[in-house]
Amino acid sequence: MIRTTSIGDIMVVVQFYKEDQKKRELLLDYISETFPQITSLQYIINEKANDTIYDQDVICYKGEDHIFEEMEGLKFKINAKSFYQTNSDQAYELYKITRDFTGLTGNELVYDLYTGTGTIAQFVAGKAKKVVGIESVPDAIEAAKENAQLNTLTNVEFYVGDMKQVFNDAFIKQNGHPDVIITDPPRDGMHKDVVQQILNIAPKKVVYVSCNSATQARDLALMKEDYKITKVQPVDMFPQTFHVENVVLLERR
Image 1 (cartoon, helix red, strand yellow):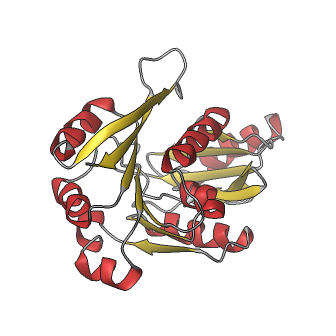
Image 2 (cartoon, one colour):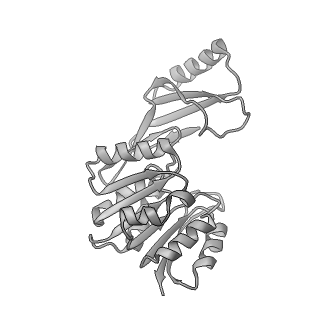
Image 3 (spheres, helix red, strand yellow):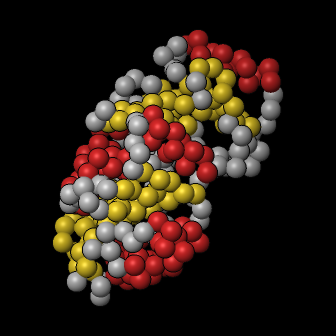
């Protein structure tokens, strides 16, 4: 896995099927010496023979265990397990459109579902009264909290847990009734219980960011009786492929 950022940081993570210290060190040393511009060189011993790393230990071999991205003066610390958009330039365009669709005035409570490392949450925080982010990956939430501290943002809070379990009535009672919900789920889209909870809460606006327009269309169909689609904007995050990110603004009928 190779990640680059707009400020020149480079992360390389190599997965090995089994530990062979001599060969592993030969390869990692060769990479490090050949490409000194790498700022984070890490490795994983993954005997599952697949590429999922969330249940694996990531070991830093050279440099830092993270890289930084910057956007409008905000800094985002990204580790190997953090979700972050692969295309930094287009991520900025995507976040600007998302923020624009929310139409925030500074008085709104915003929920950011599937917040990842809290990038969208922090990006819109300057125009919101408060932003609450929820994410299932503990490492990502730790990074989100660290990033918020780094960016001296005091109006964002982050919670970790399975969305369909955490995002319940007790959570709403504790954190307040959102005026706007931003949701940016994985390719599978939102669980039907999460969709139903959004309908129960009935915020004025829902901004749905999706990397899979098929599951997005499925979820939107479940919401069409209560919400009308007022804006749609695709963003080409993956040039030379048929994939796009798609941002939809839903407003309560």
